[in-house]
Length: 212
Image (cartoon, rainbow, N blue to C red; front, side):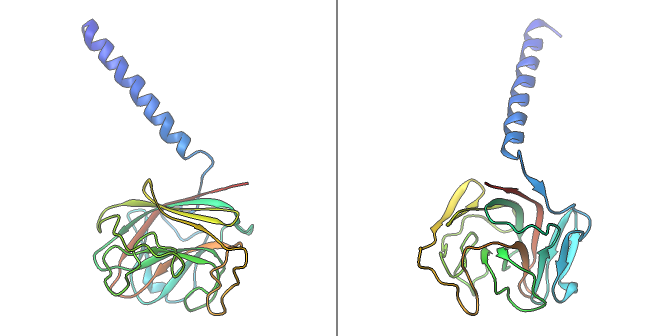
């Protein structure tokens, strides 16, 4: 290998090292909630047949069911949650936060970050803070992995699709909890949604960092 080639290789290795370091720093402090092979730390509330694990991902397909994270007894208050998600065409799903386990029904507690890229029956698209701050623009395609990020700090909620912030919500000081669905910033855990038999949504690399 001549001197020029050695320099080029060295430069490439340095560049790769910097890139890897930058990527690692972006994930520093995050804890994985899903091991990619089992339901350890998670609890299905109804219709377990709506859930499976395929190629390291939870797959939601079937009648209404919710998969709650129960692997940490300490409730999440301020946090940053990241999940890699892929929808198949005409699918609906969701990621709940500040929720708590319930044996059946649509989760009453907390909020839902919408997962919907082409489900036409619902105009609230991926990244919507459901029924609070809708997103009507399509930001990602079906059959493509993307990262959905939820950040809660105090009374502020941000939702990102990849690196794009699509929701920046400040809860009003006089906000009251609803009767059927609280949709009020509080504390709790996370849940993933299986919406209907025609929807198929994949979730993997689910990680969280608590924020002071």
